[in-house]
Every structure is written in structure tokens, then in C-alpha cells.
Length: 149
Image (cartoon, rainbow, N blue to C red; front, side, top):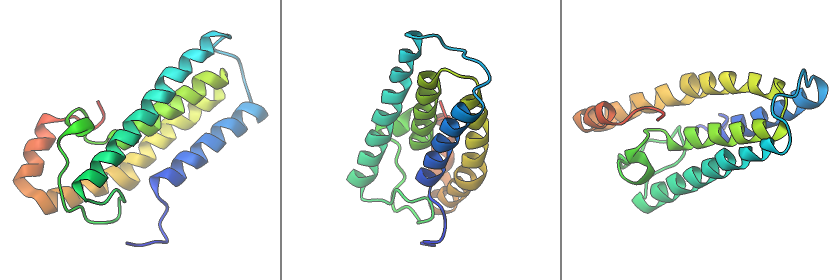
């Protein structure tokens, strides 16, 4: 593994920090009134649960959760039967929850940048590795399960 590379969690933390900084420095306008912003707890908690479930599935299968290491197993059960990238989906849900809780418009500007970065920096590379490693099994899984939801 190349330890000099940033992990997805680094991007998540930086994105959340960026959302908060934008909120406090340039809030633009409030788009979610109180107490409706508390609805943000739903995607926030769902994202945490999805990430924990995916992490559990990785450890249970004895394969790596790190994107730069070659996987030993193709996960297709648990949360992986609904999305090929449950951890990235979980990260986005966490960020949606935080943006709703924050209530202002500017945190939402971070989300598309985060999604594009995850796709370009991690997902495409991981999927190439999975295709090289698992071939037809990967192709069948990819045809059956969507990338996000």
C-alpha cells in the first residue's frame, strides 16, 4: 500500500470541514428552517449504519477495506447486494445529513465536488482492480448491482 496517499475518510473529513467553514464564512441563505433541519439526522445515521455494516462485511470476509490494496474477496452480500460502493454512499449520506442540520445553502456546494472526487480518485480505480482480479464474476456483479443506489 502507498501510505502517502489520502484515504476516502480524509476526503470526508476535509469535505465536512469545508461545509462548516462555508456555512460560517458565507452562509448565503437558510434553506431548511428549524426544527425541520433535524430531518438531517435520518441520512446522517443511515450513512453511519451503512459504513459500519460495510466495514463489518470487509472484516468478516477477511479482505481489505483500503482502496489501494488488492482485495482477496469480491463482496456481493450484505450491503453490497444493494450498492457496489456502500461506504461512499454512506459518506454522502453523512454529508447530506450534516448539510441539512447546518440549514444553509453553501454546504451543498461541497457535495458534488466530493462525489466527483470519489468517482475519479477511488471508485474507477477500485473497479478496475476488481475487474482485473475477479473478471467474469465482477462483470456479472457489476451488471446486477448499481454503483451507488
